[in-house]
Image 1: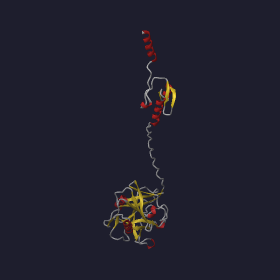
Image 2 (image 1 turned 90 degrees about the vertical axis):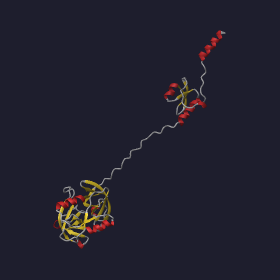
Image 3 (image 1 turned 45 degrees about the vertical axis):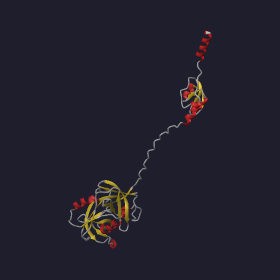
Length: 307
């Protein structure tokens, strides 16, 4: 009897208790594989019969029960892989268009936000009705500002620019008395840019006639020296008030002092039609030329035309 009991105990020790594997319905996810060397290897792509070493190398889990392996493989397929965060591309700004400076002129500030100049300064060709500048800039006290064309009057050769950034400067137009022949006429501007120095130039003369070529009463004639680049600039009286806008001159050595300017009264109508406010002042004290230059420097600008 003792012998039979010992044999029975030895059998239990040698054989061991049978291993119990969970049913497929009991499976809730990954688990540590039982300790066996071969079985069903569950990876995300397939279920295959494999050994433990090969299964682990594939990143799989080894199961003795094929149904459990298939359940694990399906769980891996259904499992949502976190979306890879792809950084948004950094927008590359479009390169600014390449412009070429095709001409310069002079202008002056009215009401801080607007600049008056000549119509032909804002054209890319010599035609007063030709194509306008693709871009316009003004230079004031060595700082450049962008500007947009607000209006053009080809008949009276007037142009209006609106600044993207207002300036703390403003001109005063002549009020009283009416303009007379013989009065002081001072022009201030930027002639022959690129040839002469970059600073503004002042020239003094007198009003020669109250009418221009072909008896045009919208302009007057004056004899202060005027060159290319002065166009659109101010012509001032002895008090530094604007009496005209430089328009043109006769282009030869014998007549270099025969120049024409649009009367400030014509400018008043142009500004009023564009709802641009402006100031007026009477001719009072006669300033010395350095004082007129200092006054003009505050509101006179260099105008650039680009294409």
